Length: 409
Image (cartoon, rainbow, N blue to C red; front, side):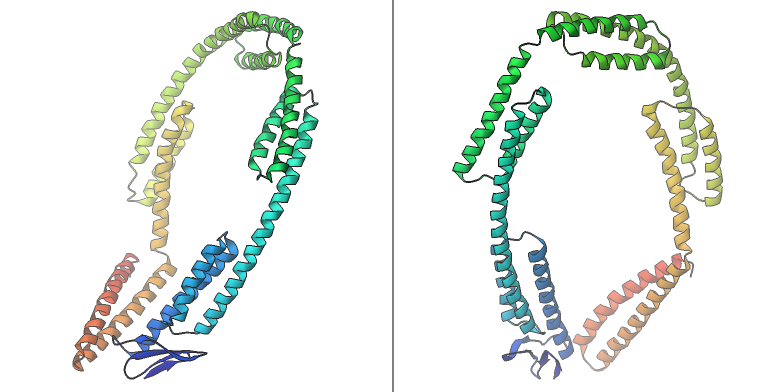
């Protein structure tokens, strides 16, 4: 017979667990020693401990519903009450009781939180209504209009109140938006004079754009064209019949300048294309260093290639990532080879590998002796079981020995 503080196994292989109500039968064990029986049911107890711990964390750290929490608690309590495990089952029952109290407390907290959220939503909607009524008097037409649209999105994201309160607040909110919309329409109805001013301003912008179209001061003129475009947009729209004609003249002047600039840049692009060809040849030369056979020689060769690389000028921007990526891939391969070499010769790693191999060798020797002893005693069932375990340990040992060989010892 074998026992521990929480359970025992009698001569018939029946396993018992000790509880506050006395001993309870856990189960029957015929497959091995009493110690193995207790260990098996102790592991089942540890499994319950883990499951209860996980549920405790879920209740405390997630939005698990009270219904789901109670279902999970009942499931675990059934397992504890069935006492198919060896350990302090009374302690687990107390933890489940405490968890029930926690779940109920959380239920009340959520109820209070929901009431709080409703109150906060009411205050938030009241604040939106007040802001909308203030915006309804604004003359910042674009900003106020955008803000009112944003307020609608905020309103939609808030929880609904009771129907009466929600309808009253929405009526005020909607009325404010309508008042602003009417004032804005009246304002834009008087914009004809402003559009005439925009036409005059754009006439001046067109004249300057046309005067710059023959410039060869590429950077400064391109920057000025960007400024003219900004001024064009800021001037507002002229009358529709004038806007298109002015735009075509303005855009046409820019096109003349940028076409001339493009012709000059095409020559530069041809030079960069030749540079790209040279760098692709160097990348191909570097790629021949992989796989790395002689790290020191490969490092020296790569430095030489890199020096020649740096001496070459720019390449087309869209081609740069690909050709540079090829060089980076070779450099990464050299770094990985260097790191692998360091790990291979690392004395701490070798020591760990040697220690693991020694432990596995001891375990294999011990199991081999146990198998022989069981055979000699005529206990073939036990010997077969130990032989299977020996086979697994031997496989691990073979793998560890292979790893040790990679360290050269």
